[in-house]
Length: 416
Image (cartoon, rainbow, N blue to C red; front, top):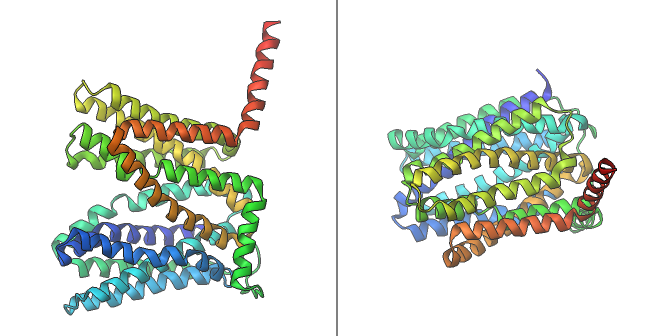
């Protein structure tokens, strides 16, 4: 079994565990506090430390073997879940314990995500990054597919402590699998001795992003996408399907399933067609991605007089298409970062990327929520994605100009 397969198996186990907690934990907190406001405050408090510590984690991770950090993170999550499960079994439901547990889980989950991204780059040859990133997207989505259903079922029948115990077992298994990955990597197997201070390392990471034009361009494009589009699940999709078309909430989950199907199909397509250089077409894929969302918005505007399920069927089709194209955008971008960002600063780069996304997404949700309440979710969806298309055209205007000139030249030659 190759080294990357061990990482994939471990990731499947940890991703499955990680997908259960966000679904079940809110149910337990709501049951414990009997207050939506307290529940919201709980998750705000518990998520902030991991977000604020992300840049520091990226710098800290660089000091050590990524396999060791990944193993340490997974094992710590297993220990935390084991302790919390025992506390719950003995009836210790203290709010402070739950807050501490949630904060630590969020921190070590972020650490696991950052270290495993760099470990992935170390284990995969540059020429095969897109292929294996495609496979990873398939496995990630398959791993989390049944997690919410299983989590809520176990929670309803056996209680929250049993859910946490299952998570502990999954994390232990993930740690065991990680232990089988050989230590050798692209940049050696020894822990790095780094003399720079945290501030120096942080500045080097920022300087790299600022001075590398291609990296900066994609970095800013991701921020634009996160601001204008990342609110689909929280604002625009429910605003269109439930608020405008009054579809039952019991079938709204099909939207996420349709998107996941598109993601899985896209991952298979990338893995099967690894010779295609998707990054060469990324500007077109960006535009196509937003055009699909514009079509969803226009469909909502113009199909209001039809049966709601006519629109919903079309929306599900577009969501499959959207999931497919989204991965065709995400995988080449991730592979580009993994191949172009030096390994010795990758963890701080991905930490800065994650930190920026965690700051920009809530702002995008806030902006989209206010705009949708004023002009409607569908019109907001259209406007947001037109703005994304404008930003993409501005970012790739040289490539688009060259392509347009080549097209005109070809037409001119054909007419002669």
